[in-house]
Image 1: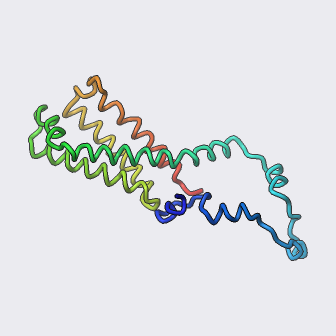
Image 2 (image 1 turned 180 degrees about the horizontal axis):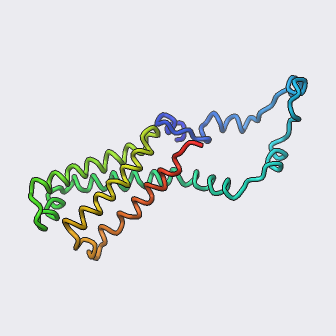
Image 3 (image 1 turned 135 degrees about the horizontal axis):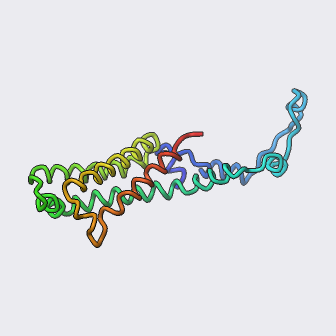
Length: 183
């Protein structure tokens, strides 16, 4: 799986080559290193004991492990959202037209929003575009929130809460954007 993700630009430390190298061990003759005046070679345990992980190191490691789950969640959420709108565009447009939006504008917003959702949901999977897709998700969420306040403010009081899950999705997208920074 991680080898496949490498094709999308993700550099996982769990690729098959890295796992094989760890399983086989790293060995070598330190004679030339010592002759060149290099510091003494140490075991992994000795090296880790000399440089213990800080709180920031532990938090970064946990975030790194959570990042694929967050990206998968955003992919599913945004892609499914677009597909649901495309499955019943008339019903989605009716939400806007019943509140006074012109029919042509309602259809444009529904179809445009659905395509944008799907594109962003898929783009976040491709590493070179992931940060921009995450920012796009946050920006589009803000547009959806602003538009709902103007065109359909009653949706905020809907018992199923269709607008209440938009802010957490935007925050998750911003979290992903923050943790996509390379070193």
